[in-house]
Image 1: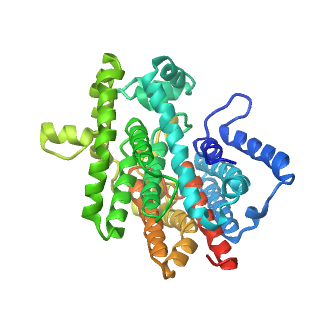
Image 2 (image 1 turned 180 degrees about the horizontal axis):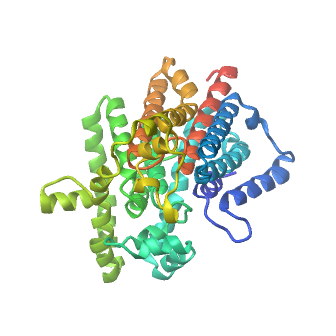
Length: 429
């Protein structure tokens, strides 16, 4: 199957948007994988379900879900919102594991790099959809119209107009989508550091980078955390960093000229107004605020300070057993990740979520750390960047062990790394 076909299958899994008659797009990915197995392979492979790495993660997820149910029942709150989200995560992970033979077929020797490319292309597809929604107003209106009513209301109200976030074809377009873009950025930078890689070459690199950046601008500032992590990783790995920057600037002259031309001549005055008055102030709010007030802040960064507050000692020990407040709001009106997990089950539950999340990283980090090559060191820094990235995101919103897009991406990354390791153990490269 061509790379773009694999990217479409992953796109359907991770963004999990509603499809009439199929419940969600991850189901469609399973159907497409099934058709491929029957028509091409003549058999249905289940061997990835028997991989120890994946079995351990599924066991950890089941244990976390059982614990979450026990907590809410023991408190008599019967708040199953978190449990339902974990069940959805389980179904999405199953769809991914079922599709792994399609996604990695023929690329076991470089599975990690291949998976990174598929993820980047999946987000490029998302960015193209968002770009078309921006450039073609009727298409953008259609993308917004198929969102749930509650989401449409959020998109159309508030002090800052964020209707353009509805251009994303995703079931979670607010926090999870830009967080996923952050993962794509880290992997994009890792791919660029691979010698003789053929996934991204020439000006195609700048096209992909532009699309990822444009998709991030329309999705949310959270994506730039991953972008920053990718830049830091690159700095640590480049021995001739300054020379590389000069080369990038020199090669960027033509793409920048093309973008300026598009902006000046191809988009309408209404679209330019939308960029200048809605999209840019949202995406680069920190710089706008610095220009007006001299402070590097955003409304969300200021608001998040109020989402952290002192709790009673007993809450720190075992939580309140509540995940959702009144009228489907956040319990205690906080959406800060660390606070929400502590409020639900105390510090022990928050630590259990971290332990579950670490199952995605322990083996890949251990293997890459004990490798002897520069490639192993680069992989270690990439995996470490992805892991640390989660803890930054958790400060803003619930991420560790619970964010479904993130867990699917991380399982794909970890599984591909382990697949490459097992292949090379049998067939040294």
